[in-house]
Image: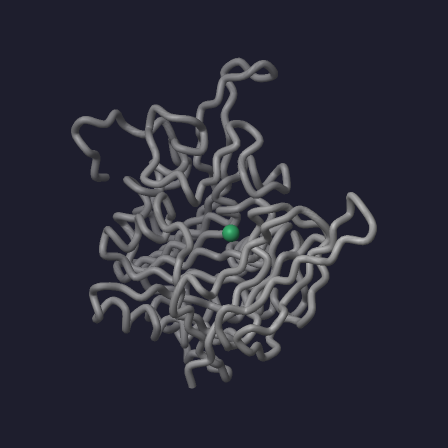
Length: 336
Ligand SMILES: [Zn+2]
């Protein structure tokens, strides 16, 4: 595939052939020499399901290692999708940052790399940078539509939504929102990123790719409802893209918008967080969303986290304890 001349080739070797018809279960083998395995490798699971020429989808989970709806839906899809129902190619990587996924952590235990802040990556960088580089230079270029599953991980919890970004190219933006609509999560989001540099999303969009993502729950676990949403959503997106036969199973969705940085609230003190409203409930500007109680002394008044805009509570800090700088709440605006 494409290689930038001044960069060396990726050290990752796929054990699958992206041009071969049928189902292949294999690995992206990334050499990783270490104390317990001198010539060892990181083996990132990959499945390729191809049936002739046609559009190509890249389906990914485990970009962050403590988010489970995507991996649950994608290991399942890899096991069950019949290539006779496919036209084109489906590439499934259910646990992109496999070392992080194995450890149940957001970032890699090897190099502390946050894969979703490591793009475009480096072929001669850390393990996490090598994974990003492989997606950047080998997988994204062969993709027409990318769906990257996220949830809140151990520290955030979200109302379940599928999302696409506001983009300068309005044709691609409309295609993204149509794919989000097809995913049919209970909520659909016009998403604003707090920190877009280095994201897989940004890499795909700068390459002109159709890219959608999700936030389907969180807390470092999954729920029956959010896994059902993920399973239905991924099949719907493949149907919408014309890769899997059959009609999209549309479900009602309500659109949300994140119009500015005022969506986000951050803690200014350490302490114990008391959530004052629940996910999905309406919020008025100025309303107290959460209180942070000092735990180091008695008698101190709690710090109040107030909404800086009206809307509904789309995400919240999950653990009971909070640190200064943690994102405590995200308010989104209903647009229908
Ligand atoms: Zn994530």
